Length: 291
Image 1 (cartoon, helix red, strand yellow):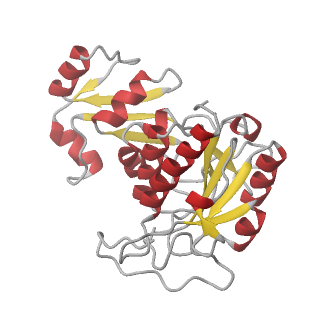
Image 2 (image 1 turned 90 degrees about the horizontal axis):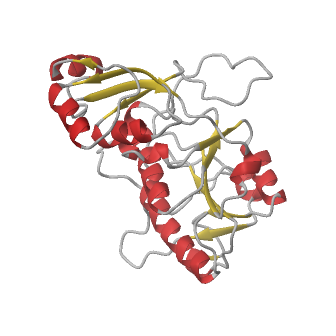
């Protein structure tokens, strides 16, 4: 699962008991620091520095503006972006601040491609597992920390009609900033279901009738040769480390991705897109349409 495009050094070998998800190598994700946990009794929530979702870029913000579930706090637009919103019939739920592009640059940094749009909103609500289990296809992310990778996974998930993404409240990047930009509007179509304990969440999905398939380079068969049926949960492991031991043990079955070329590993976001395409075809043969 090596990501050579960034030029960053590889992670050290996985710890004992960890499973590699798709092959050798891995893309470093950069762990995110978390403050003390929230008070008990509250629903799971990302334990990041802020409860505000930062959204920028045309597709990201435009899709958010079309989503009636979004609750906006602040919207910054340039004159050109405001004209484009009007031309495309996209309404603004609150009065925007019309600014120069340089003012958004100051907030995001010169490397952020914002296309004249920046918004602050509440995070979207996390659906309960009981609701997630009613979808025909869901993704489960086991501590994938790179926001670029998670954002790309969200985009693929939206393209393949995934009902939800299940991930841990800790050791996961918050759905904001770079992740939201990489998702290119996918956040508005694929909700994150946040859980405290992934193994318990997988058990609950299984109790609700889901087949839980973990992607692992040591799986007994290629995912294309694995019997897949709906409702289905595909589990992807972290960059470099792969599925944690308990996660792999909780899955119903492990499957690998066999690659015919000289490179035998994929970046986790590419592996997600490939496995989702295989899963969709299998579910179509099984007679199940996207829910």
